[in-house]
Image (tube, rainbow, N blue to C red; front, side, top):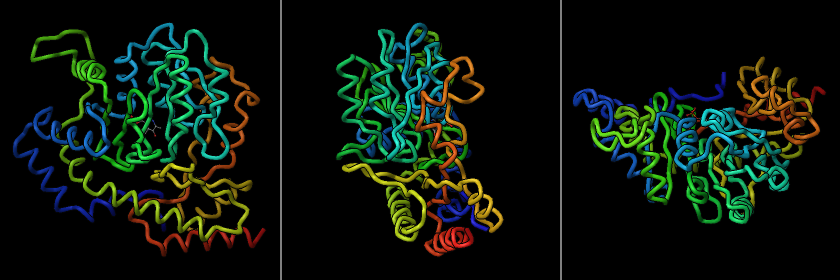
Length: 367
Ligand SMILES: *Cc1c(COP(=O)(O)O)cnc(C)c1O
């Protein structure tokens, strides 16, 4: 059996350090705030290359608080890709602004700039670029476009920890970068966790206030905020795992290359890398016409796969109010029936990849 993700395997590889970190927090019984959170925020900001990092409760809150911190809300519009996890759009609605979807492009699956251009109105305040599957979005063009229209550029970096776009680490290119440390992400906590990174001191200050009841000091509240904090236990775990992130990403890239190599010649579209970008393969997503049959075949052979995402956001029940038509998001609409995520994580072995590919070849041979 080959699992789609195997968090236990990763834990067993670093068990001693993790157990010590968790034991340390419990021994001190300092669960909220404190040195461990500060330490992780500092380490993460340094590694990413951002001036400030604000730990928050999860990736969705990172987006929500970043939008609030930028003053975006009621009456404003925010452009969001049609093909992403719902959290990207939810954060916009939760803050009172309106979600405006733009289609993705066919090659790298990130925002289609020409569609973004069409969606800009006088009410547009920001664009959220999602570095989907670990692949950087086209940040040069997006930055230019946002500058021209005086829009904030927010990066949803939940799937792209340490991915590079032309020497820059994603999350540091736009006005704010929003990270998730959900357990299955490239850098994952042992529960929910997230972070906001920015070079702008004012934005960082505002986000820090918002994430912790608007407080400056205990019982001194400058504004009304929220309760969305990175806790000490998660921070301690993340500090341990952060040391391995580069190595793990490298391993993901090697395994992705292996897949590309072995899948050659099959009627499958393999992921491509944007020139000048370095993808961190949060997911390894292929495209094929017989997606559902292939998925069933792999499942019956003990190989788990995923679909990211089976229904593009505009077509979800949750967005019925927008009455989206397939013709308005042709690429996302087509992709939802063709994409398939194969297992890919640092602990996966080359041998397992060979087995997966062998089964895929067997599937096509029987066609
Ligand atoms: C995981 C994810 C989020 C949300 O992160 P949570 O920590 O689960 O709230 C947001 N955007 C994208 C693209 C994600 O993959």
